[in-house]
Image 1 (cartoon, rainbow, N blue to C red):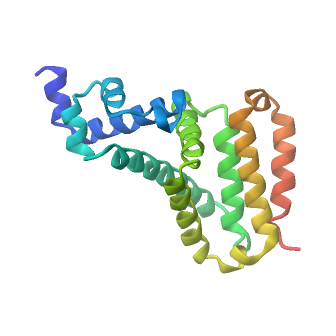
Image 2: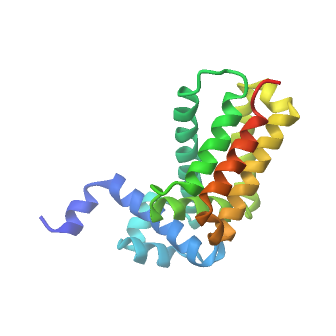
Image 3: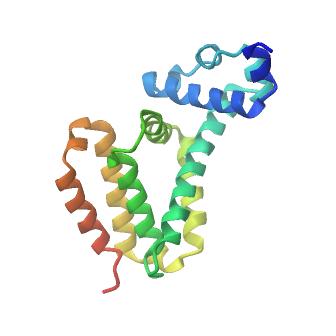
Length: 192
């Protein structure tokens, strides 16, 4: 069985390749540069195969952004499960996962592309709204963290760190500074 036929019989692999191709295209040239033909070529599939999985370019972009949220959400849940202190747990996980994603030596170039894509996508109003909706839904389960300004300040600081790390690659080589910054931000999530 040739490789193309085998891959056609594995739609999850084709879908994953298409989403990864969206991310690669967006990281290289921004969301505006993502074209159906470019994504299909990068994923080594036909335009018809792409449209079989995603009926429009917008559906393709939305699926890639939904995958970003799913990855982040999964990491958050795992981090929260390891935290025995209930007060501030969500915000601590948010801060820790954000820092780990941007500073971990174990972060692959694929992971870094997905992180970059998630930030790139936020300039698009529809994706920014998806992010706000996702965050609002997560915060519904922790109302004290939604209203407490210390927790909000910690999440905003983590977002600022994320932006700095994506826009200033040199900042990635300062682990001592980054560790101190993480510790400082986490103090906002501890009970007074």
